[in-house]
Length: 151
Image (cartoon, rainbow, N blue to C red; front, side):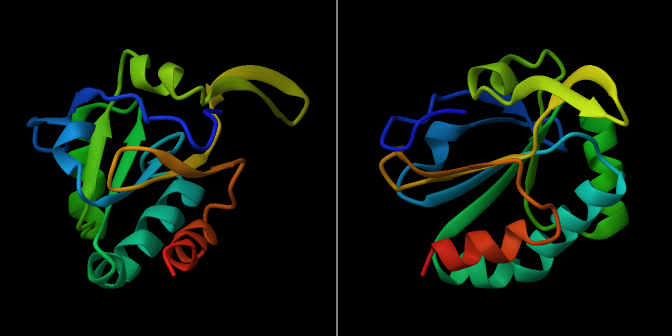
């Protein structure tokens, strides 16, 4: 996990509409940057839907939400449409940003060890500095937790 107080590494990835988006374009706004394992899975769906429900409150506080997983643009589009997600989803099929942000880790599931995305959320300030970092977050609780961090 990246350290708080350090600049958030810039990146450019395609969003759910295939448009290239970079972190730099959000300078001047707070950014909730969350990494999640997979579209359409129960935990990831809860997390995304809860971010969606609270979206107007994040906007009121001048924050944007960006979700990143290794799913494809097409998968993100289906995810967005199925659940009416009002925020940006970025596709990192090469895992370059996932690795840069140090969220590709060894995971244990029912005793089986594999590599995967560890659910992680970063709060980045208006100047592009990481001011909070949370790893192994609880999917359903994370959106409210992040809203409270903006208080």
